Image (cartoon, rainbow, N blue to C red; front, side):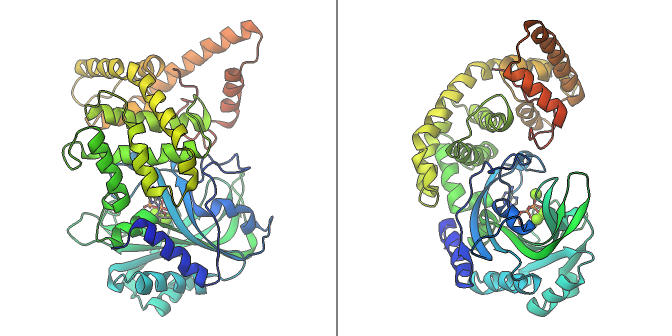
Length: 469
Ligand code: ATP
Ligand code: MG
Ligand code: MG
Ligand code: MG
């Protein structure tokens, strides 16, 4: 059975054999791209090649790209642990053409790799195309012999790919694998498409447009290809599993979590182990790429992910910091493919250890406060915004951590109330600073947050940028 490490190599050598330059993953913090919180797809490092601003000595490339989707346009944080197919950190395998081949070649490449090299049975695959893209539909018919009912036309943005609010973009075709009718879910475009039966494995984007901030779009001078396939998803499939978290790599992290907390990996704490395994990867790779936990911007997103994982470890009954103990298992699995992880191992362990030690000082009391608040609420009622704000302000609970905790009970937070409490505190803080006459970092941050709004720039939806503790 191929391991994820094997599958990554097979992918890269297939495209290398087909004239592509093997290019290294770029860091998770995009270089010179303030519009993007974290690298969220393989095309990010090639953005300027698609628009023609930059050229290189190759027109075809292939990569295994580190991606984090925990903020901004693509945010999968709340899916983690609950769906079979989402991580905050994952590897995206891609092949790229910069004004070289287009659809007529990208589709056959994908089909050949999947059905020949990977040996996936054809009758388990189906595809979507953008509703107006007859050309792509015809190529699929010709190359793969797919019948019309297995080429689904989608009129929504699901088949028009965008990295973020600006940048190169275009219609796409997505390849799905049918894991069988014992799993709930309908084909793409159906009412039950959110289920996990039909899993999207590969997205081929036909880059032909550029999106601007004012909402306008231009046609690019050249037509290019950008594809992305989740290594963990293709891995699950090739290992005969349905769930990404059952792949060799994720499984070894789940077992490390179970071992460190003296728990059963498949027992009642299963979801906790999944979240911990996922968040261990995103936090470790972010630290290896130079992000440190802080109260704003990227550092705050990192802190939020770390603290979420730490609450899950706490739920497993951990009495001491856990996360740093899992780093060696991760380095064993991924250190060879990503040497930066090995180089940063000591820093990652120390950062996790001190962050968890610190957070544990308030975590217990915060959770007790949360329990008390909940006990006073009528059944199913939402947590008042002021309570969530107190947890945030006094106990260092990022809003999404509280939401994550409530989810287990089918409850939510009154976010409007939370925002109001936050706004009130900000107003007070601003008044205090105005008196001091000093432009503090935090004051500058408020200005920026106000100017740009709590959008891609902050990476989350409510204005919780300036978290305390
Ligand atoms: P989905 O609809 O399942 O959320 P997507 O359409 O958002 O996926 P793309 O933006 O098309 O995903 O990314 C290309 C590929 O990367 C996907 O086909 C999938 O294999 C993989 N992928 C995307 N998001 C994740 C994730 N959060 N975790 C693991 N793999 C992912
Ligand atoms: Mg998605
Ligand atoms: Mg999709
Ligand atoms: Mg997609």
